[in-house]
Length: 77
Image 1 (cartoon, rainbow, N blue to C red):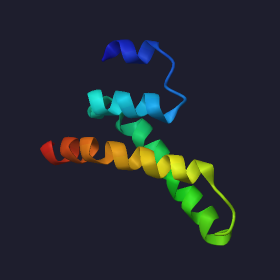
Image 2: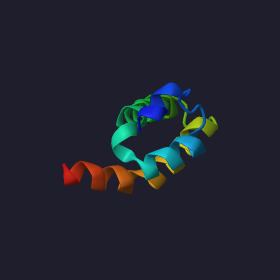
Image 3: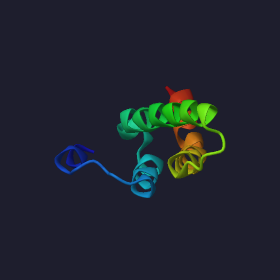
Image 4: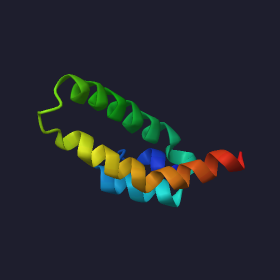
């Protein structure tokens, strides 16, 4: 766990997804950051529904993959 702080935080969603699944407690803040980014993208989509939004698509897939890991972590504490 402490080694994580010595490394650069992941800059891509698949890498972060893997880290969250392995250790959800340590990556809660990174998840919340991505969740806020998702919320911002949803607002943009509401104003421009005809415009393609690759970021939103990737964030939806990311959230779907890690949600259960974090939900279990939150429920256990």
